Image (tube, rainbow, N blue to C red; front, side):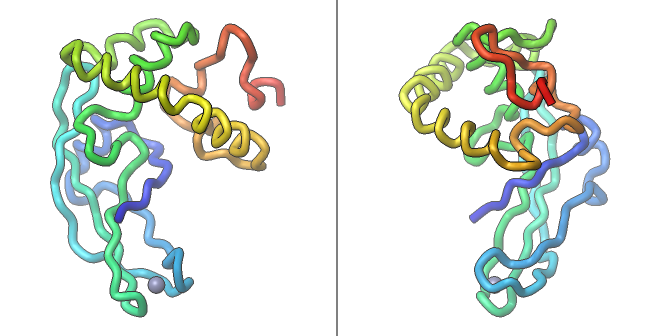
Length: 167
Ligand SMILES: [Zn+2]
């Protein structure tokens, strides 16, 4: 299994830190016991045509005998491309205003995966809308955080401004 956590660093900043990159220790979601770090592994993340090698730490719960990967939020499970790369490609297709230059985030990605991301998004758009609506009602959403260095903070839909922009 994996746990995604809100990382304040860019992919390049995180990658440059190697094994000393930050990772939050946290309580086990199942039993509430404090976890311990349990090794790490390397994986690749592509963004803006650059392939970065990042270290992903693992957390272990002794009580549950369970280990989870701690994925910084720019890493997508089973995807080489970063969250922002995929997001920029999808948002552009669906007429969302993205920050200038954001299309470069998926530069170098072949057309086929880009088409696949967009088709998958379209197929799950109702479900995702429900999740985002629920997140928007939380006091501190991690999906669209004001302190996030990601381009998402500047993303505004043409049809409906993001709720957080009006606060
Ligand atoms: Zn546990």
